[in-house]
Image (cartoon, rainbow, N blue to C red; front, side):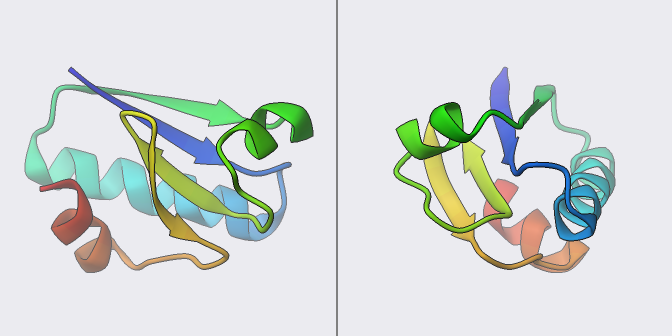
Length: 77
């Protein structure tokens, strides 16, 4: 099962990334867990200095932007 982390403090872009990610996961039929990481220290532990960010199985795949659903499907697929 994939572990997907949405890294962000709760800004509108962070919420949009979470929404787009959920849509991409549903479209792909992935078995995964989506977790929101909001603590700054925990976000920085990923090496991320700009949010929102997306990490899959501990690997950061997107930083400082909100990929659309199609981009996310390509990243997650």
